[in-house]
Image 1: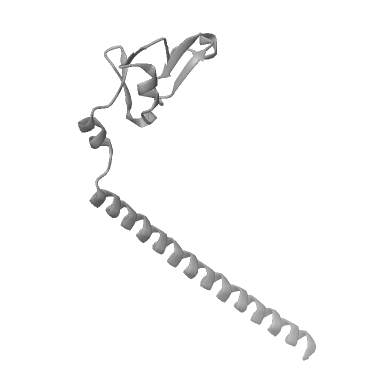
Image 2: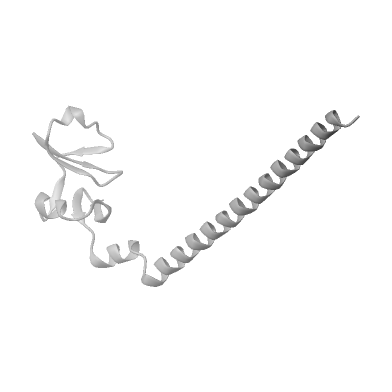
Length: 118
């Protein structure tokens, strides 16, 4: 049985049948630094394959991937604004459809009156 590492997702599988994990993207029996258990305890997004070794990112490498509080707040603000705009458009669309439906009902009523009155 072998350990495998997915170079695309950072996933690690231990004690597997290697034919079930084609290379690429799976590396068979890569070297883990300092060991496979330590690397398994690190979230997949913070694992890298570097010079033939699968290792956890250093703090500066991980910090470069992790957004700051200001960046997170800005993204939340963007998403909130987009949601508000989508809701505004949905409300306007609903009002337009409602007006169209009311107009159609009025025309239907007038047509019905025309059928009754000679």
